Length: 426
Image (tube, rainbow, N blue to C red):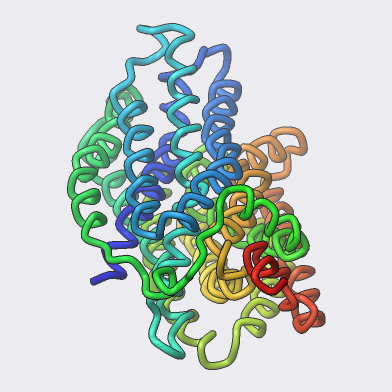
């Protein structure tokens, strides 16, 4: 039950992000000036990405809070902040009513969500790694990402229902708000179950909990690990947002498939991810993390562009489903090993902050802007397969980091100790 309770906030974070990605087109029309469909869509996708820019700041401030005050207290705080961002967007009148105030509030709401999300994933991953039973850390930590897939599935199911019941005009006008209102309704329940979390034994056993200055000093001493961690995350964050948040936009605006078909594909991707993540997490406990990291990035590097090129010449529901399920397998195989590997790399006294900084940097620079980057690349090149090139670049980054970690493992694990530890030794 602890796994369910700790993952509840992670569900809300990803649910909100997915809803925003799924309805990027009507959200752009509702909250931004309508000079052209492309401009309003790009503004909407840029706002989707703007939330990720706050993640590094949230990782440092909230991450140090969790490393100092405890996993439980920090996870309750992040969920509360995330809820405020959700409420601000769900209940906001559009541009036609508020004018320029409307997009400003939307951006501020996304920034607040990004600030809290900067440490949510890291806090959940660290908590799960610290309560895992011996030999099952990969399986336990994989449920952090698996909870996100439940959010993908829930958002997609609601999307299918909304598009089935309402007309396209109604969806564009107000129907897109329904999934956001549903998210608001479950906030009290999520806060209640997360309050029942117990603190981890590993955190309670620590004799010293670092201050913000201690955390920053330790991170500076271990900057190479943080950079390599960020490189590892690039592959997982780009592939995830490509196959989930961007799929409805790509299927509708680029392949010109029906909205219901695109959401069905996204639903199937969420189910596929939910299967592969714990399966591959358990496999990584048996064979190690590195084989999965190397194999998944190599396959993605080789197949991403050809798969999207083939899809662009065969824009069918079956084609989109097949390509996305292949990408889902690669994502699930890689992410299940990568997340737990990242928790193992970070020093225990700054584990939440170090993990969150690495993850948020990669997400802020690459993953969060994946829908906007893909839309822009297709627009300027007229090549519908360019998202595959973007994924290949991410795979190359992840592969490079995995190779470096594999060859220099002994050196990497000689991490700088905490400032407090050095003081005690002297």
